[in-house]
Image (tube, rainbow, N blue to C red; front, side, top):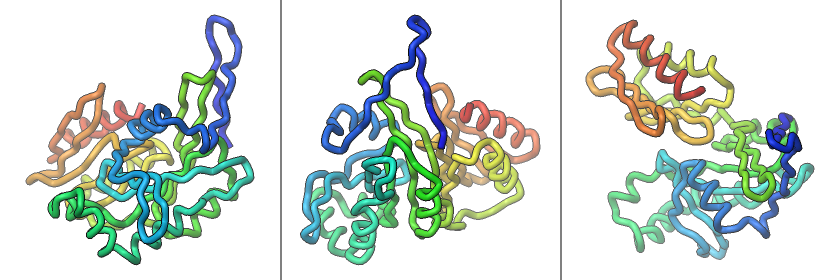
Length: 247
């Protein structure tokens, strides 16, 4: 697996890695990771059907998301999350009723109840990759390391691709953009919904949707830029915007 080394340019010494354990997963560290992954807390520290759930999260696409942790190099890739995903799917009515205590009906209707799992760990192996390939669920492996207690590094290590639906209307322009994105890097996830497409690495950095023409909305320098794509010239501009956002 890949190795990250951070070196202090003044001292020319490696920054020491602090191993992250679940027990010392502090509130401050959680807040930084949550923001970096584009997550918001839907519910925390609650019991659902006799199961304690620490965090029930939503990602940027309003998909229910569970955080899991790989405790050690040779530990299990997934803990309780697989069980909780099935528990949620089999009891959607009860969960929606439970959430209705704090959410409006319109807010619940916006939620994608096909849960996503994000696994944080300091190291993943080829056996971990093989394991999630066998599971028809949306799973991301994120390498998470703290250096010298004050520098956090998050690295997309692997993600399953066999869960992705093909719901978005296709066109030649869309297919060319999708092909170009996949050439940029294998850590890019292109997730299709009926009315839009979300493009992410660790977090979303671009969207595609139709508004008369195909439209690209891409994050650049902290702000979103919008580009309508009607012809090959527009396509060329859109691809450059995506490359800049990816770099």
